[in-house]
Image 1 (cartoon, rainbow over the protein chains, first blue to last red):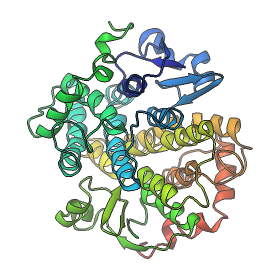
Image 2 (image 1 turned 135 degrees about the vertical axis):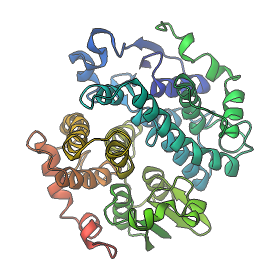
Image 3 (image 1 turned 90 degrees about the vertical axis):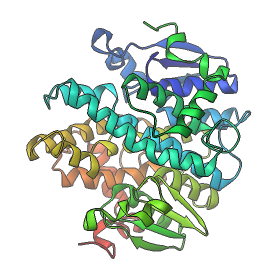
Image 4 (image 1 turned 90 degrees about the horizontal axis):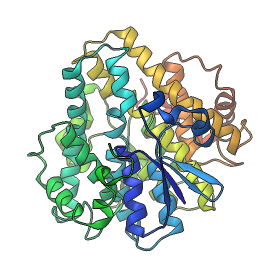
Length: 214
Length: 214
């Protein structure tokens, strides 16, 4: 397998965590999201991944896109160790937590959206930073509540093991800190993030540990 | 089962399609997204679904949120007829198409985001409409390409049957038309949408056919 990744992409980091947690051997191809006008927009990259975003995962001659679809693929092809609980209801809760980050937070604060706010909408740094913090906070509030309901609020978002939801949480927390979000209203998320980042699958895959880190 | 729905919510419509396609008996509880300051923000609704969005699905004493997590739950609990292909690679492609709508388009044009653009960012109707059309177009371009690669470009987004991706497409096309997006660059999506809307699972679940339609 070959992962097309950018060191600071939250979505790519989710997949790096899943690959590391499952111990799946793979190579990594860096795709620089700002250099050359964004290498993800190049003809050759779009030919492979029409969505023009990172990450993408090549497995033999197939290429897959969208971080959550890739992680579900890894879960199906390499079920052990699992990233989803065995029961239907538990799987639905874990997926809802992951989507609460992947749909409700991340798309609102990725690079292309901030570029649109700055460009066509003419917004300055202050309003753009407020926008980012607003949407992360909006998504973290229910996640904090769900973490308390479905986990111990200290180690994992759900149950007593690492799940797909945790793969999404740690990159989003990193991003929240980069954007100076006040995390005091989210003690469970802070504690869970602190625990998870002690695990090799999370620490070895962090942006600063990537070959393409700047 | 009981679906908490709003007639015009794209995300709720996705789940209505999946329930109808699988023939799962259920009741529907309307949640009005603008009346009373948004009934999804009420204390009782948030207690049930902390994410405060529609849809939510109650099954016995459990409540599930996030449309794609709910549809995966329906797929696992009611596998026949399936909404995902049997092979791992096909499942990954269908999920990536669905996420290309659910993550890359829909979150950028739902009500709460447009309210923020109009309120705190002070944008008028023109720039807000341009924003909506821009992000739908950005998401439809790769979807058109993927539809040609993975289907016949005329009946379904993937393969020769209805999938999770189709459940996401039809509500998004409806939304694109409501926002006057020029659909001529997307002939495959237009043809697939036209075919799908002849199927009862799609036509009986459309916004205008809902009890809470206005």
